[in-house]
Length: 569
Image (spheres, helix red, strand yellow):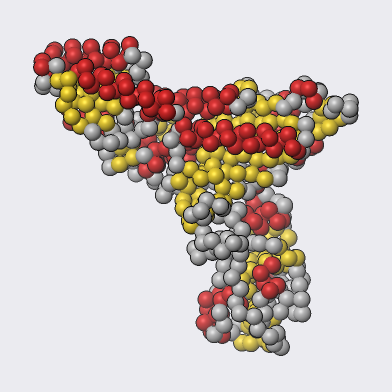
């Protein structure tokens, strides 16, 4: 491709609304343009990268025995009602009606769609196992779209679904996809960790997330240096370090004026924060619910959502007026005598002589003990992991930020049962399918790759998914000698099967070099003033190699290095 004929409106200035490196660079490198909040147009360079990521994903999915299909992005309401998720999925779902008032959604995911497809079509165990996948546009009405294409309302995703005869076979399919995902992200040159994840709205038994490490990532993962443990911070188990055990004392109501926060209560009473119970006042599906955790920790909302078994949007933190109307006092909520649903983190049942709110202005109760003075539903772990925490074996946890680029779920029979999708087993008996679900964020992977590969000058693409593998830059296109040699080198690289771009624009050399660095093409040949002597500049974007060599030597280096990198992947 010749750059003089290519649509590449690069930007010199960083757009004001761009937040992270990948967002800024994709805008500046003319990969994307914002159409609306969380909605983007992909320009030729951006689309080319996406297509290369898709190619890797397709190759590995096909290698793993999956078969590609393509379903509509429009999904009927009925199948979502059958699974019970039409109302559960919440406000992130784009909903619409046709001219006959029939309701649909723009698919945020496709468990119901795939299950409905297989239902009635796959009738015998002899047709199993089966794995179907698609690469399709997904839609989620994000409350606050941000980070460019990282958290957009419209994005490209590969989703696959496996169908098996029993749990053991489902696990085989699950591990098959696990290995396929390792190959995908290895080939995409992403630095990633595999973490235990939360099933969330997907449901099912277990899940793993593939997290690309990036300082700009909005997610946090915790892991051990030995590699024995890795999980998202939402999923990570907390092995709480308890304060020293004390003999239970008589509970006592004390005057604590103006002490609404844990810090204020702890300081006023001279009692450590871990021994002060923190109250979280919530309205859950319209009813007051109070959760209590140690005062030195934060609530993990994901764990609470999982414990309650409801969607997150059904939980509303009560304001002061709501708290007073529920029968307690803001800042002084406690579990003793509270007429409402009470959920107690298990750690509080093992801490003696707690400080709790007295449900009365400017008063707390000291020396409260679970079982003797108050009770409630015991939740095994509602705590957010934090720096300094350790595993059950005592190994210290490390923290890193990252971007979720892939996830795999063991769905079990959740969707096959709700949609009544069955097959006949070897005894002629009807059974529900055992299912797995597997997603790769196509556009999000592009974002993650950039966030891991850039410098002050622009993107540094790995060869595997670079929009072009090589670029030939004619330094001065007004010089016929340079233009002719540039064209000759360009054609020889094309003949060698190299994906090459020729910068033949009538632009200043500085503009060409700046654009070349910005768009990050791995291998470069510059044709300049020594073209008449058959000498060119050979350089690399990542390693910073820069040397003047003969045309033949430069061609050999580019072709040999690119083919070597292709082979290694």
